Length: 111
Length: 114
Image (cartoon, rainbow over all chains, first blue to last red; front, side, top):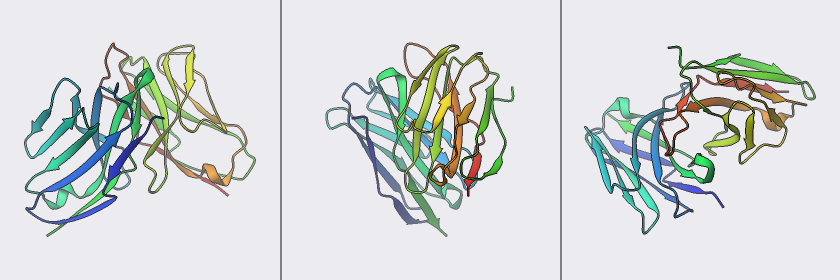
């Protein structure tokens, strides 16, 4: 079936440390993998995405890596700041260009 | 551009009532979709549409109907509300091209069914 698993469900880090969130997907044909950040009471917003022809993509303090063979991808946030505290969702594209989302990770950055 | 808009922001229904959640976008996006968000379950796809007159089911379509008569609008209808439909509902849109494109979400509708 069309499935995306996301771990961990909650993550607490000290300000300045790095945070890593991992996702696996079920369909080897998936070719688009976005990450969304959702602050409390707000809509999800895209923070970074990667396509299947690329292994890694960076944007300032965030990066995403993709391992197509293993069908998993990860979000890396370096030098975390209190404003990084939010819920993060990974997603993968499936047949019909549908986006299926993981269950989310609550990231808490302690100052 | 207003982007993706949703109305109402909050709604309380009684079991068995029906209602329509409105969604509109002004970006001329062909692809529109509805998700529900429940604690610990992420965003689950209810229905989606790749253009006017075309709709299809997502992961959790039961109890919901959609139609797409224009490119701009994609309403979601609850036929007979049940407490299990208490959730936050997000509408989303993106361009329909030959590869996936950035998806934008509306602000959400918080629905409570008593």
